[in-house]
Image (cartoon, rainbow, N blue to C red; front, side):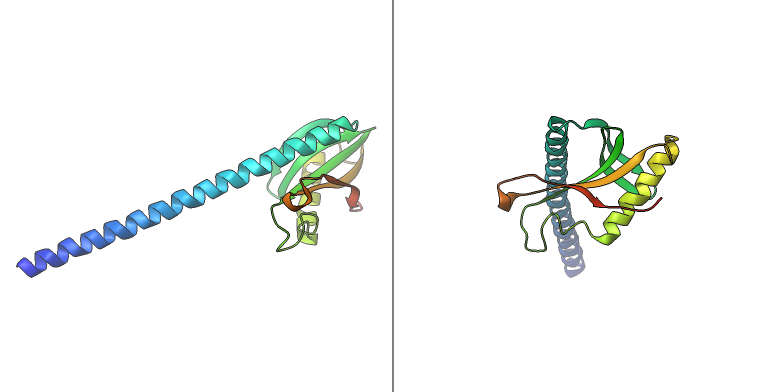
Length: 153
């Protein structure tokens, strides 16, 4: 009886320890995600300010639909500009500019089509896809690529 109680007590202690480790790991992961989200938001704010200083007008931030999301939607002399903002702390896995893969471009293009359809702008405005890239290794210099990729509508 004593051994069964001891075994039960040990099992419950081990379960509690494992449970606590999982909770700690989850808290650490949430903290990482929060900091990544806040860095992303800060990068988008800096990009929006940078583009506004160059004459673009902000129309929408963080547009989401089923097919994807667009960081910034701006207007530049009657042209609707869909902006993908990228930030990289390190270039170990490629630069911030290189991280905008063909797959990511297609997602942005599909989201742009949704935006145009939702706002009855399809075939009514000229569109452009830009990338704004920053990196901690480049002293947070902003690289703005106009017409970085395109799609025939």
